[in-house]
Amino acid sequence: MKASYLKLHEQGELQKRIRHARELLTPCRLCPRQCGVNRLNGDETGICGTGARAMVASFAPHFGEESPLVGTGGSGTIFFSHCNLLCIFCQNYEISHCHDHGKGRENDPQQLAGIMIKLQEQGCHNINFVTPSHVIPQIIGALPFAIEKGLYLPLVYNSSGYDSLESLELLKDIIDIYMPDFKFWNPEHAKQYAHAHDYPKFARLALKEMYE
Image (tube, rainbow, N blue to C red):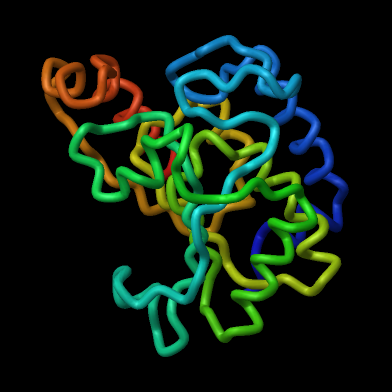
């Protein structure tokens, strides 16, 4: 299987996506929160707590995902710090919620590309982006560097489902496998546990787009 993002890179389309994605960061309208901050100036971060660079909490071959992703070499998970949904029951609370003293380090595009290559060299079957909704431009921006270093693995988008259609459009023919984790059917529950009453509406639209 030849990953679809390789074709976009060959056609020059990937660079167009990168430019469009960066435009969504100033003012930030990347996710349904629509914070409107300028994430490129280094001072504003919005609800997700992330600025111009993606912060990575950890990365490693992961054997706890669905078996088709794990295989024998594991799924190459990249856990991003911070989150755009911030459920109060988050199992990765220290990574996602603790903006001031949470785990992780900022990565520029070359560094993020290097992480992908390390996971590929370790025998992982895919690159699995965990909690990626707030760092889509950074992920896309790292891909050309990773491709130049030999990346060929399929990409997995492992999100909460709180994604905007405009952002998901950027991922068309880049992401090979979508793995959304649908949280709430009830708007009141979404408001109570994630301060996002509109979650069910946006997640339903996101699931349809992912399926397409």
